[in-house]
Length: 255
Length: 110
Image 1 (cartoon, rainbow over the protein chains, first blue to last red):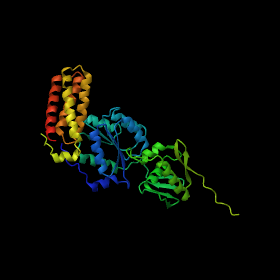
Image 2 (cartoon, helix red, strand yellow):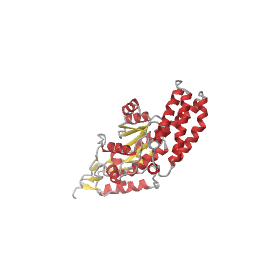
Image 3 (cartoon, each protein chain N blue to C red):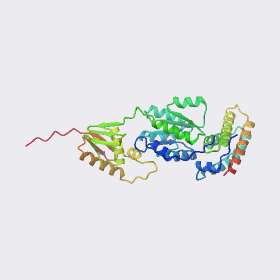
Image 4 (cartoon, one colour):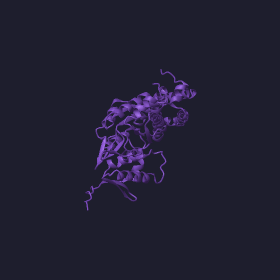
């Protein structure tokens, strides 16, 4: 099999990577550095944000903390079988589409992969255009477990429109502030560790300044208060943040 | 018979040449482990060959070295059979020789 069409088509890249209106983030779980490098390079050329992890246990931690649009998982990982990893993810209600990748190409292997919870299967060696096509197809699939509109109190977060609204008025947020709000609304009333926020807002290779998350939280809190939102970002020092619905204050009585 | 990839095709998949360098390293590792096939009771060495062959089998074809990938997967299968007591060290040695030869051809393409 020749694999001679590796060059990315920028137009196709935009179509895949910007599918939901924002760069989709994917996780590549592959311990072979060369294959991981090739897959990562191709996926980035499609406009996707890519995290690469070589161990199953690390992948499980990342998948629980991050809202990935897709995961590409190799079957033969050094610390754990990829099938076990996929089963564990599904058991933990991680609904992200999974493309399983392996050198094993027998029918029973494919059946095992799909039965474990993978959504599609790619046999190595693969042609790069096939990889791109399968990734594109999986990203286009609607996920019934992911609501596009999230709410708490009078706040509505529209993931498709990348817009947050309070009482019908759009909140002026940066992308990071929007992503922070989306995460906190998804986890409303639950404490969200700072580490989880960092992993949701930044790639593993990004350098994050020491007080970046505090700065985003501060700005988001100001924006919510300014718009009259009836939910407040609470801080638990040393632990994290929590978005909690507040009782609306009754209108002040006239003197 | 596979059509040999051109230098331009390989450059698209391996722009900085790291995979080609890996092929040279893997070739040296396979050559060093070849003696283990004469001592089929050295399961640790056989496991090393199996893992090396598995990884190369998965990666090589994707990078355009289809014959290397197939030879590596053939070797992996014969080593698995050997470790399960159902194989023949002569067959495995033959597959290793084929793999080394295909690696030599591939390395001349660099």
